[in-house]
Image 1: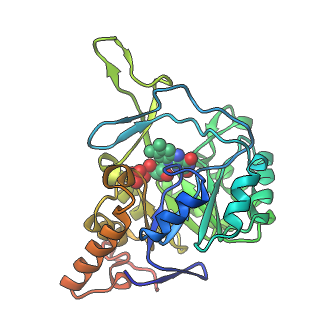
Image 2: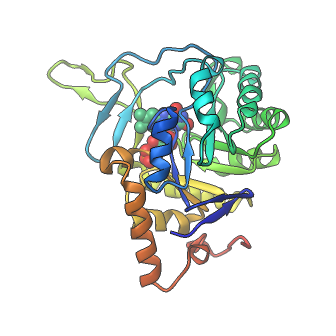
Length: 305
Ligand SMILES: Cc1cc2nc3c(=O)[nH]c(=O)nc-3n(C[C@H](O)[C@H](O)[C@H](O)COP(=O)(O)O)c2cc1C
């Protein structure tokens, strides 16, 4: 696929590695970029150190995955080795951050911005300790407040990553846009869901409930991107269940500017980026259209490019 300009930065193609799939090791992230990924997202970084949930944390259901990893992090200020290695990188980096309160988000964002990533993505699918554990991303006021507060302390474009748990995801996206977000990423995992071991008569995951990802959530993700496209005029990273070039085409038609993949990396390896780039290019050639021409094509009202 051809290179694209996203929020003023040149990416070699429109494919994005989702957060949390391959960690934060500079060597691994570099390999993903070399394997055909246009923009690499880091595993979410928060205040820490914080252990994740007990095993088992990730189960492959064949048609997607269920996970309750629990946002483990060494802590944003305990990552000297990673930041050092990433400072010499040759690829664009999207740093994902989270906090349990507005103050924590601001603290992490300020520090991470100083490390010089190309973009900062706020993972607002985590519980807000000031609001009795309600997710930041299901409440317009909380989403506005956190986006606005982070925007004030960072020097790079801000991407707000939304949860499909929001009753009206378009309204949340709009609140983030109003607060200064430069782009939206959707979606984080769906659910939560649960699987039960019927012989043991207990939930399989140690945390009992987990987020759903992979092919089974693609229709939810496509619907969310569609709703967001109608609500905002900033670009969207469409993410959730994409595994093939045709899945990516569907995301573009719903309104995505870039397309992310997470679980697909587990199913098809990091080669999935090269493969999807090729499948996408072939589809566009066969249909005599460009990527720009199909963005938002499923809508009766399209953004001006
Ligand atoms: C094992 C695992 C860990 C994840 N960790 C994070 C994370 O740290 N931060 C985040 O924003 N999303 C995280 N996600 C969500 C993904 O980035 C993505 O939004 C979701 O999996 C849907 O995309 P997919 O269907 O392509 O996997 C994680 C997903 C999985 C499967």
